[in-house]
Picture (cartoon, rainbow, N blue to C red):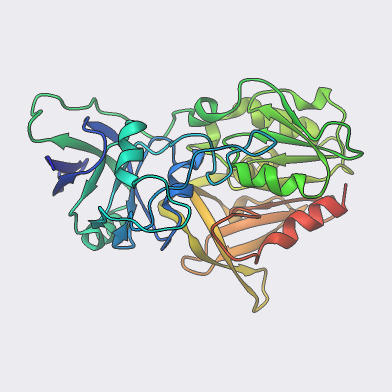
Length: 358
């Protein structure tokens, strides 16, 4: 294995060894607290432009499932059809893997998709550093390529949603009685798959597509990467949709932030974000808690929520907003995934409620 160094923007360095694609790369360094699910995390479009640090120490021990699609041309075991993360950082990579569904090692998959990876890093130290100082940009530099240093990049202000969104309208289960428009800001395959379980027609549109020209029964704004404030066209289209007070709207993850901006609220960047399939969320002022899957670096400012809206969920780790709902109209949002293939079914009721309102 080649020697490599992760260099953070504040000058902090972490030495390790390469087990992925051997090419320098830059990105926003973040950490993910999930104990399993690295194939799903790597293929989640919401990780576009980021270097993922997995806090669970052992990674790669169950290999990688086959890359194949179902009858709807949706990836069967992944959240999209390819890796979106810029690179990964782990403490201990397992060269040996064992799982009934594995067909290749994590290292082979990363090399095939040209994604760098580091092992041998003290990820506990790195995670504590990011918690104390906030997520920051970083570069992976190879010792044998001292002059090959990736250019300085910034995460904020880049329209990553445009990069991961579909480029044309895609329809699933055409002819069904109810129609749901999904604004693809980086939608995961599992969101579409869960909607199809309710026998609705799903109309998947690009992030900046004016869906108000379509006939539909409900609107879902999906998850996605990056800074929500750059998606001005999406926000404008949501504002237009809100002129109809009776049509259900569900905003998930990035969609939560975009609906908030369309309603007049403000958002802000969290110090280190919420990433993982074990994020605790409280429902309103109740004593009920949900275990949720999250991947975001921004949150709604509770102080800016309009009088017609109310905060609905809050994060039990830092108290930040995790969703809001309209007091009279069928509009509501969640900062976590309403459904995900890597977590318990705590949040499945959100899709059921959405479908019931169509």
